[in-house]
Image (cartoon, rainbow, N blue to C red; front, side, top):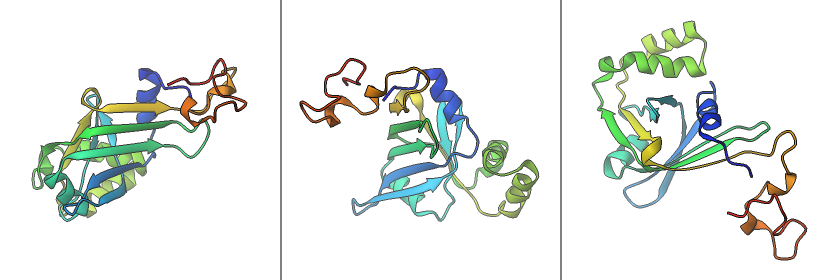
Length: 174
């Protein structure tokens, strides 16, 4: 599949309404995946667990995360990030970054509803984490568009040797 260039990646990550899935590790070593809101801010993916969320406990014990941000419609853009989440503001410091949280909410709900949501949940403290793009392993891809070759929709390793698209020009050799 074609990769997104940095501009395409950032444009996609700024698209309102796209949910991110965060994968983290429970204390017993089992995985936890949670769909959450996020924002691309200061060249980082920023996200906010509530004080009583299970994944906040996971991040406190082990900051390793995998983030999956994708869309359901063509061209099926996808961004996968792996790295260590950084705590920017701990629970109880909400007032220091409330405007950012307001911006996150506005990505997912109408502005007037976002403000009501903030006011209705202001007594539910949150932490603020980020994963900087430069500190993460980032993989991107999308379906071919316009006149791009259709042979490159999968990574070359997925094509069985001798099959129609194996080692064809335009297929993704990585």
